Image (cartoon, rainbow, N blue to C red; front, side):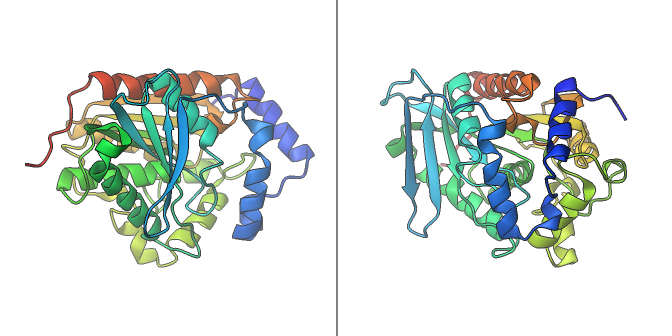
Length: 320
């Protein structure tokens, strides 16, 4: 196993000293409370942005719209639909608000985050259905939001990366609005949990194989659903003609190998892909900027890549 960033070692030591329970030892409700309690400890203060507001759709789904600092209210901006991580069980608009603000500022774009329904109360494909609803609503209301309908991207971390990858495939197939970029941060792309990194990362980390099985069991209690490409996009017949991608992976993560495999499949299927791998980092590091300096560097890199793609890439073809 590759070495760990010294700041990660300190963080893990601190977690052990505080007697932190793994999520799989908690009920979903308790896990959500524990996850919320880590926010101020792990994350830097929220950055100022040009605008932030919450919108409730007719079906009750809540979206948070953030426009990057220095952007004019009337400017038509590219837009990133951001899906938060948390194993489809934990996480919400607040858990990833600071990350979304930072991405909006670095990229000079509008970011729309989705408060999708969580498992086990709402199982697969509820989170995906909500994510699709959000993307469709954004595309239909682009003028009102002052965003460019032909410059949409999808992105997310962990479970959110899973949802983003599936939306990118659906856009290719015409069952979702087409997007021009996908940003997948240590994504879950194979719910069969068959990769070797599940055998390597079994203890000592904040996210282990046991934690992932806990999340997967809540999201897809029916094992048959785990081979559906809408749950496991790595199992899709082809990734060809999906949008250009950024795939970030970290070595000390049960999801490492499937993320690397997804980047390789994108490349093999002719998709432009940038693969960023950190051999000394852990899952969730983008939300640990107060304790891990590399987190802030990587967030800036991700935001820069998203901004470059959305401002300067080829716009998505739109239906007649």
